[in-house]
Image 1 (spheres, one colour):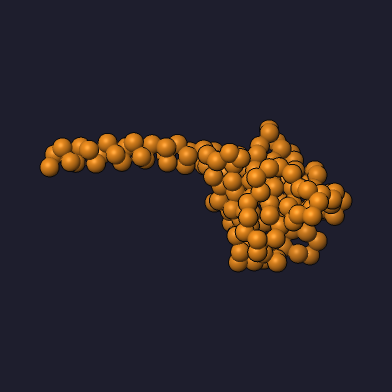
Image 2 (cartoon, rainbow, N blue to C red; image 1 turned 90 degrees about the vertical axis):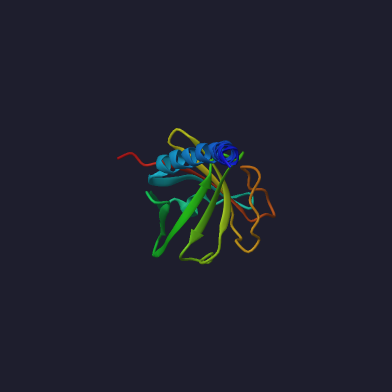
Length: 150
């Protein structure tokens, strides 16, 4: 019986180790995302839509929460990340807008104070982008954000 318990503990430690490391990566990325962001560049279906999104206010708060405001429209929601995947993955759960109640799948990357996210804009498709690109005849939304300085 003692041998079985020891084996069970070893199994938990071996299997739990990667999960704990992944959780730490996720926590580190979530913490790094906190702040106010502005759109630097945006493409939808291969078309530049930067000007249309220049007024977007995007705020990420602790607790995996965000607020996006575009004119009079406001969307609050939550999101999760998987920093262990390549590319890193993100699942957004909006509480407003056309994707309300759905999961919007995306990928993300950091480079200093730059956050790049590629989303599947059509949440009905439920497919996650594989690359940071928005080609013509797709509904992929590629946005590069810059952190606003305090």
